Length: 133
Image 1 (cartoon, rainbow, N blue to C red):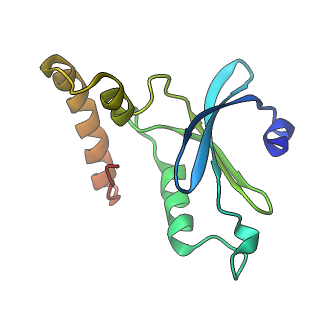
Image 2: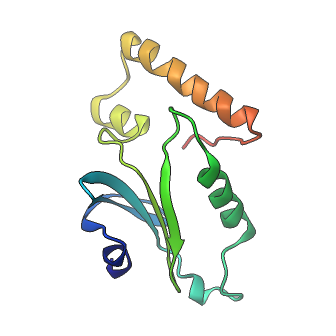
């Protein structure tokens, strides 16, 4: 986390872990962010570079600008890792909420669905396919 410290981020609280990255809650200038830190050491890959799919995904998320899409604040890579600093969502993902409280009631679905549909429409209008996990 030394690389994040050098950029002014502090306090790395583990939030989630997936197959390719760990996610931490961090702080900078009084703001709360989520930082996704890759688990893949790119120095150990044969060509010491990110794959074509990873580069394309980064280019796409860097350019997303919609109120219902998480905003990426900063991306950088070091010799071995990739860091994506993004808006922190304190309640987590819809999947997290469903796992925690169970199926959503009709009222929540009516409230949550329209903004999610607008975000997906924005992605589709910009020729981006979204994968629900």
